[in-house]
Length: 124
Image 1 (tube, helix red, strand yellow):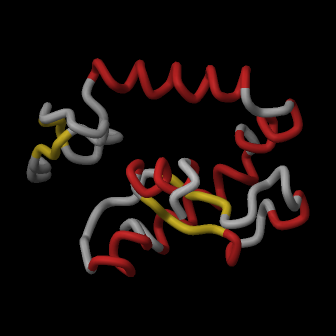
Image 2: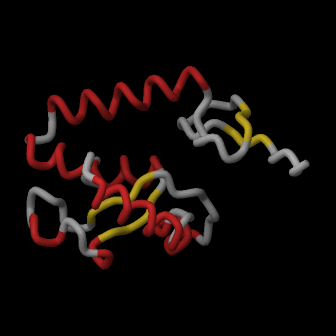
């Protein structure tokens, strides 16, 4: 029998709900919100080519490799020495700005939700 994993806080910012470790990190309430948010973003904000790319096996493999290589938020660690789990793999140069760099590992950074919002909020 394998040992049970410790519970961890939901990854949704500000949610104190504890979820079993290794299950994806979101509570039931926020798992649905997260999925809907990404679906809405794909349908309203991304062009078809970009949406297709982010749903492609090539991107999913590369994203998984990057998260295994850097599972912590690189910005939090670099800027403040904080150890925060990464939840997003961000393109330094956006896909729509340079399509040729979409699968380049050196164009990727692992970040937490907060840092990703900060980057896209123009505060970077």
